[in-house]
Length: 231
Image 1 (cartoon, rainbow, N blue to C red):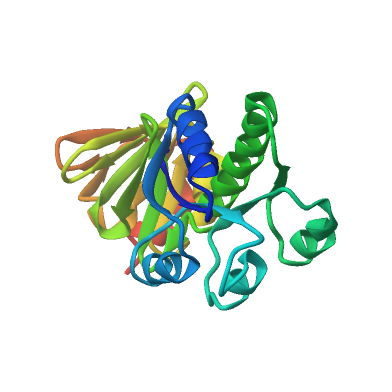
Image 2 (cartoon, one colour):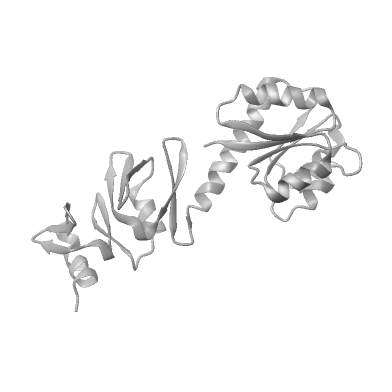
């Protein structure tokens, strides 16, 4: 998980401190830094920004008003020397409010909240437009439903076998079962979900998907026959 950060502050020293702190935190990368809020608006409207560090008091356009102009707001942390804006930050759903001068420990605390919110948002969007989005090896992978052959539960992980690759993710098979479209996928065993269209045949208690062999639980065999082989 890598969060692309935009830094917006009209003070050079404030930008330099943020950049220094960000360099010490894994998975954060500075996309751009701006001293002018109007330059920041151009970036926000044309590039994907995951995390916005936004000063409140700036000439021409202050931080809260800049945020209000955005139809889609990134996760935002206000950085300011003025504590009276805390209520405004709350009303704008800002994830945290760093009061200058802030320490690295306080900065890390804010980053922890931002990362937790980012993870939650990714999970909320885990299924979209025919894709399954899963986190694998610290990256988010988009897997088209049509590419999935079958999914195997493996301890606390699952292995997703596709026509192109095998993706291992820290996820529960039961949760994936609820996310996948029920008319396209079937749980055939406590440890296996198959893509209906990929099944070639049933041999006894084993499903065949190409050269792959998938066990069928006795309690689920009737559902397999009704869903995959009914006339």
